[in-house]
Length: 585
Image (cartoon, rainbow, N blue to C red; front, side):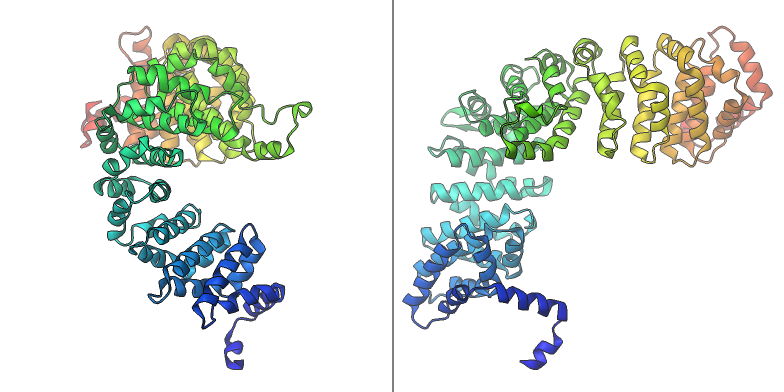
């Protein structure tokens, strides 16, 4: 209609016109047959369309442009349509959804999800399975909002009821749940609808696909969720507790995805406190399995997932960190995470190389997380293996990366390695970074880099002998950096961290003289004692407290100097403060 065309945006019209130009006559023929008055011809048309679109993305796109989707959905929802026709329509829609993300968007725009969910109320199992298969394909697409599954409160209950119908309903529903369970609200919703009880027995199904999808469900349900984890630990299937079933799935003869996913389940349960960290299923089964996943024989994604899960498992437990550090040369394996791609002579599979290049960044990120966890709490772990693997040099070099995420993670890992470390490790870090690079990081435009670098400095400048040693070799440069930051336009957190570094220096025996002989720094401490922000006042007070501590040599002279500067008067004022943190100190 000419009036209609006048109202269409000209760019859209051109796009639509040229899209239609590309559509072949046969594509048009497929859609035309959907409107035939003879139901048998319509059915045959849908079957022919199904055969035409298999593995043919261009044909799928053509049919979507020609308006096949609304017609297929109409036929799928018509009570007068035969069950066979409705089933074939669901199959074709599922095939269209397996194309590009744009195909999925087109299907969502036509409100396919409510139509398919309505189809699940049919008594016919084959039709239900076809609807579920199509829903599964749509929900695993990254363009589909997970919340569409939870919009109607009756849907989850109905899906739980359909779990008993066939192995296909079990596989597809578990896959839908595992992809649509993002965060605590979704976990609680599924948990309250009896997900644990309804899915547990599927872990011993005769179908591998069902077992695998059920396992993935538990992996996402238990992640960072104590309620689910505490429930899982007491559930039994055929007289066997779930943790025992998960351990069987960890065995080396099982497929890698099964080993990894069951290790994730046990890791989540351990972190939630449902399984003790010294339980044999963690120490002798889960941890070694995750270390195995880090070896270079594994696919890149498996190594990333293995390292990230292991980092999460050992993050807060010193003994697990110690065990991990001496298991199967883990530290040496991690060093390989930074060597992708391998040497050109060894490359035989160009596709694999291309894939690895794209994901090398993820590999490094996973290694950083694991390095940080390995060195989070215990000095003995850091002492030998990490040094021997050359990791410190590697991390220092990565702080020079142009990639922001690598810089942040590199400095973050060094910060953790430096925490309560021995003096040699601290010296190696300072040598590896160089004064020039330290200054570069302290003047980085990204606040995360700056905060992590200050955190590193603070960890380096802890325990008196270390403070005195480092300040005797790097004191001038460190004091210069502190001055620049306190004078610069930085946020409260940055300045608070910098004042805490000064407080650490003031705790040194000889190092504190670098503050006492620097009137500029003393004036800055005085200024921050009277600042409007209580955090900064408190941090400045710690500096003064460490400088004037009575039991140390020279304390009287230092007290006299600070009294002459008016700092003692400010302390008296602060003792009258209404802020309990300030007046108590």
